[in-house]
Length: 485
Image 1 (cartoon, rainbow, N blue to C red):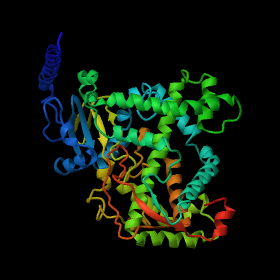
Image 2 (image 1 turned 45 degrees about the vertical axis):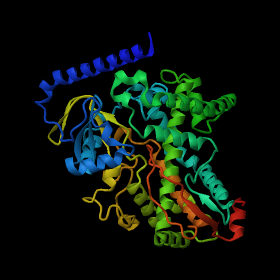
Image 3 (image 1 turned 180 degrees about the vertical axis):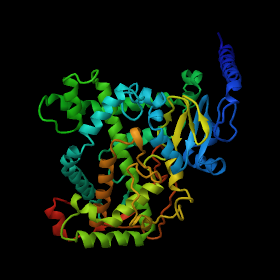
Image 4 (image 1 turned 135 degrees about the vertical axis):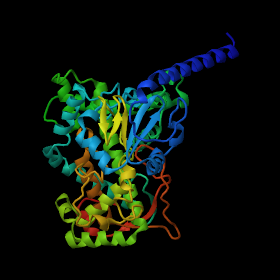
């Protein structure tokens, strides 16, 4: 068979596949037309709304919601979906009907990169997910574990300050202020960039074998690179053998030896570690970068933070965890950063496990739900001057980020809320406080901060933030805390 014949066969398969899908739509229309579905924009044949979502789908969906409302129908290929863009809609889906939308659709990302859904974030709502979530809740996010790991996080932050100050009087890139490895941050950034788009074959299944755009091949290659990073670490911990668990990996290996659950494989361990790295370290770094970006644009906010640090902590010691409850303006600033730059702009998709009704509209079993946290944070019906960075809006305000107030959902809410939320909050607040207390940050002469968004699931900056750094405290304060530069 020559090349032209092969192309003809391939085209024939595509045409037949497309015809069968259109036939399925036509046969189903008789039942659909009796339903009252949420309003939504017209879509393309077969592709649905994928072509209009672009590389920054949270912005495209925000614009569409202004026309079609806070509950909007979209179609991603053959997959029906709805987008919630208001606190009221988010509350219904993530609280009132939380159980009904607690599962995830089967995605290529979850299948390929997370070893056939053996993680927590992309796993379906089943016994495996409940088992894995209990591990996170009891061994990583429990109050005991948070307390025991405070010293470790404190030392990590001091090491970050030391690295920043080692560039004294030089220009420092804050694209990733918590960078801990030459290789790991680039791996995490690559995963975010890949996952920030929509994989066409995920929504038009018969195209998967073609791997248009090389999405699946890139995920497989990236999984191998992550595995090369994690395998030696896992083996090193395994060689330590039994003993008191020191960290999350030790706990997983102990459970593996004891035969907990249905058996913990090495692939499951790597999937859970990837969850922890991507949902913890990578997202924290992005949040810190946006925080510093806004502080460079708003020196008056930075000065208020410094005044509060001097009043609460002083300049003779470093800020500690115990100081955080008294740093009210710092907490307000962190909330404002989360409002404008949520950890994940669009929630990982939920999926309806049964037919239901929301706000008078019919939602069919299998419908994918996306909560647009970015749109909620920029809604002028909720926030005054929503595109302006203003921490004052949270001073004396009871709204928090823990999923109880649906105006602010950086970590989601309900059963699928981010299990690392408390650690993330602690890291961001303490990191921001300690860097500001110990470092004078300023822009190079004549430089302005651009706020262009990059492409990725966790919304990176399009360009690195470059700042000048110099010490803020007396030399003896650094030396007695083991900070050398």
